[in-house]
Image 1: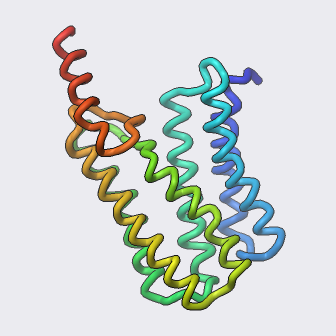
Image 2 (image 1 turned 30 degrees about the horizontal axis):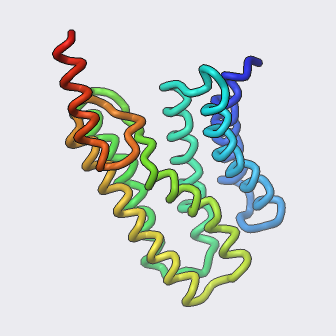
Length: 198
């Protein structure tokens, strides 16, 4: 296997590892080991993609976003129901996930007639925190502190999805590698410049 294919292979491995994570009993030692391996692939695929010539690609970015979204689904639909958290929090998390999947993707498809997955800094940061979420629960357990943390994390999730929808709604063309809402103006200027050259 060529080095440039390793990031994509790691993203695919993350997707494959999500299958047992949906089936197994959550929060057991074996479950957490598999979850940790899957979460580690998220860190490795991005680093290797940046280090290896030709490692970063449109396909890789899409696979990474899909793998991240599936891992978030594991947390929301497999792990959270087994946690002793405030009931309404789970409904909020499901709502945020549905907004991410349908509203963000829907706006992108309506505007550009294609699947648009963004790699914003805020989304990647949220995913990293979510990957530690089950481990935090195992360490500190249920209670007010964990529930308050979960509520704050849900609020951050809403902001991340709102930013993504705003970016997709205001860019002139699909911008998968835009880092934040503050990059929209520069992306639109670049789109106008390349459009004029054509």
